[in-house]
Each structure stands twice: as structure tokens, then as C-alpha cells.
Image (cartoon, rainbow, N blue to C red; front, side):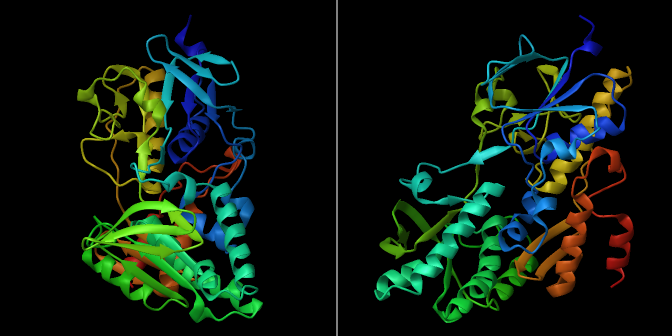
Length: 415
């Protein structure tokens, strides 16, 4: 069979997968393109906090794939991937469908990693998808309502306490958002903002491991100025979880925290499908992620490209939207080159900065590790950056869209 008649399959519709598809469409890529994801909707994860708080339009943050891919030539298939056969170049789906591919793009992302903590999966809220944000929001509003009607002070304290497990970027951004958002929801019910409590629990000695000291200090200062109290419990290990209770170990002492809302943000595990692939340990890292070449191909299967959370490059990169987006563009470029018999180009990832939400209408933008803009201006920069990256239907897709436009960075640098 002519390889050009076989489809290019893209597994996973996150940043890497979706933007690979959109770039291929814009490039008028000739082989058929099929994007497979088990969800109907793409979720713009960097703005998941705005999704929860209602600060931005829901339609922009949680659009359907068929809307994003309208008139693009990309076929969207909503299904769960059951098996990937790299030897036979086939992908089998839960519905019974299967596809034989000419090229494959793996962008499956990670899954919530609970690291063997007893009760973690059953007793915590994840915060990864639009459904997660909606479920958390419904639960929090219910807790606030019940808190206004209970006469039991211990129960009321638990209802008004949110425990966030993990002090990485996701945990900190969620804590800062809730510390401003919950008072907006609670005070109209007759409650007092001083009754609310957001507790962030971190096993290590510091928050935001791997980030700069300057960013860490800015974030810690911002947390102290939120509407509701934010507490940081550092060097504290989560032992187990039961309903409304977190068992903790701090300085060899076992303690318990009562919280009706417990959110898990302690990291990802590699997608289980990745573990089933016939890839040697030499071509995996300790977490089981796939090592890829400079052109984002699997060393043993050059017809397979991969990016996002399921992969690792020689130069370690953060698992952020800007990295995944650029990987999608690079994969699309090399797939086009491969289809035209041209030489593939090594992937160049540019890290232009860190953007973090620090509350309602407040953010910090750390640019090129040189400039820091915070407060409301930082918030505007963060939103401008992400809005520039929001996917649009392919008929309006601009190949020149980047993480943040060079012009914007030029003007920011002059501030």
C-alpha cells in the first residue's frame, strides 16, 4: 500500500496533538490526518483556574474538537485507545475500530499519579480537566452552603477548609485562586472570609521546586495578601486519606487535618499505554517516559513521533503548555518534510518565561529569567499570552501564533 494513502494518526488531543493537527492542516499535508481522543472537548489547561472562577468565557476554554477542526481536513474520532501495535503499525480502539497508519504521533499526556498513598484516588479531587473543575466548583459551593446552616463548629471548620496536596505550580495557582474566589462565593451567603482556610501541603522544604528564588519569593508574598488565609505546610508528608481527613507526618509526628475538600496536585504518572509499548529500558527514563531523538522520533520506530508529558528529550524541559505547543509545531514540520522527501530538522524549544496566576486579577510574569512583572499588569500579560495561544478553528488558524509574540516581549522588556 502506498504510504501516502495511509493516515497519520495523532493519539491524544492535548497541546502537542491538537497543534500538530492544526499545523499539518495549515501546511496542506497530503496524507489523511486522524486525531483520536476519548473526550469531546479540548481543555486549555493553563486557564483551568479561570474556568473554575468564571473569569473567562467557557466557550473559549473548553471548545469541542469538531469545532476546532471544522473545515481543517482533520478527522476527529472520539474513542478510547485500547492498544498500540508498533510492529504492525496499528491502533486498536475500545469501540472495536482499528486503524493502520503510515505515521503515528504519540501525545497521550500523563495521568494523575497517586504514588501509593492510601485513599488518595478515592478521597481527593483531581484538577486536570474541565469536568474536574466543574465538579470541584459544585462541591465547594455545596460546602459553603452547608457551612452556613450547621451548628456544629467542628463540622463547619472542616466544610470551610480546603487542603491542596502539592506545592508545584498547579497547587499554588489553585490555592491563590481559591483564596480570592471562595470569599466571593461565601460572603453573599452571610459568611465571614476569615472563616475560610486554604492549606497547601508539601513534602519538600520549599514550594515551586525547580523555579527561581525570585519567583518563589514573589509567590510567597502574594499568598500572604490573598483575601482568605493560605497556609503552607512544608516538610509534611501525606500518609493516608479518609473521608474529610488527611493524615500527615511532620517532624516525625503524626497529625490529622480535617477538610471537606481535598485536591490532589502532587504530580503525574506516565500514561499506562506507554508502558505497553515494546520500547527498551535504554530508550525510557526512570518514570517510563519515552526518550525521543532531536527530531522527536522514537529511535527504534522512526515512523513514530512523540511529544508532551509522555516523552523526555536529552535536555530536560518543563511539562508546560509552551513546550508542548512548540513540540506540536516541530512534529508537524518534520512530518511534512518526511512526506516531501526533505531532511528533518532538529527541534528547537525556546523557553520564554514563566506565567503564574496568583489570585483573581493578579499574576506574575517572569520573562527570560530577567524581567519580572507582577500584579494586575502581570495578569494582563499572562492572559494576553494564553489568549494568543488559544486554538481557533483551522480556517482562522495562524501559523505565526507563538507562545507570546516577539513584539509583546519587546515592549515588556522596555518596562
